[in-house]
Image (cartoon, rainbow, N blue to C red):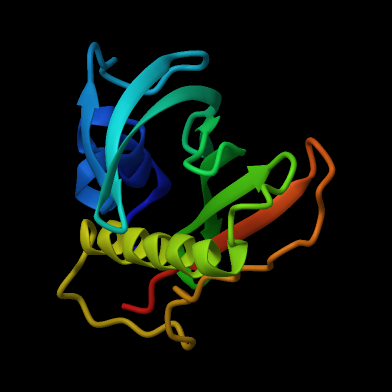
Length: 175
């Protein structure tokens, strides 16, 4: 990311900025705090594959300038968490890791092989939109191209509280 952790945090920690970098977030419903604070609950309207949904979210982790996590119940009825972690690296002012994790019993009527690519695509779009918020015209080279390829292991596990599927996308700067 072409910005220091503090600048990235200033964007991701504000609910009113979420729509700039999370493509399926339409808007918040009801009262919304100025910043995400631990334990805060929010209701959002999201559109996933052209279907509009309302999600209740809880802020489950806030470590300023390092990590933010929102949790709730997903469209498949499973619990999910969406986390954003920030780290400094030698080759990038800030490395951002986006992760979505679904836990709980696998539903017989939910085809995770279809759902997983959709989630991975949304993560990749979020990563690109987030990186675009800090675009620069400077030309620098740190070697490797940015990593925006989601890893999306589908886990075969029907145990309550276990990970069913998880996507991770890492974004780092090359310019």
